[in-house]
Image (tube, rainbow, N blue to C red; front, top):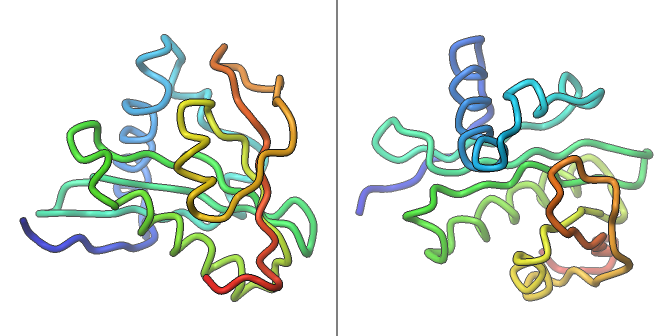
Amino acid sequence: MSKITFKTPENNKEFREYDLFRWEILRKPLGKDIASLKDEHEKSAFHLVGYRDQRIIACGRLHFNKTYEAQIRYMAVSKNLQGAGIGKQVLKLLEKNAIENNAKKIVLNARDHAIDFYRISGYESLKKYYGSDTGIPHTTMEKNISTSSI
C-alpha cells in the first residue's frame, strides 16, 4: 500500500477535486446538491486532503467559531478505506492545526454512526444536534484541547 500524503488544496483545480470528493462521500448519497457543501466559513477554514497515488482518499475541514473554539466538519474517507486508520490521521492533523491556532476546545456534530470513532479520540457527547440539513441523526461532541495531549 502506497504512502498517504496530506496537504491543503492550493489552487482552483485542487479545490474543485476536493469539493467533488466531499460531495460524493457525504452529500451525493443523500441526494444533496454539491452547493450544499458551502457555508460562511469556507473561505477562512483550514482544508485538509489526503492523497494516495495522486487520488483523494480522505478530507476534513476546521474553522473557528470563536477565538478559542474550533469546529471540525466534512470529515470523509473513501468507502473502501474506512476502518484503516486514515480518519484518525485526518483528525489528528485537524486537531494539530487547532492547537497551533490557539484553540482551547474543538466541537463537531458527528453523524450518530461515527460517535464511537470520535469518542475513542477523546471527544465527549454533549447533546443531540438537530441543525443538519442531511436528515441523518447527529450528536454534538466536544474535546478540551487545552489540557489534552494530541
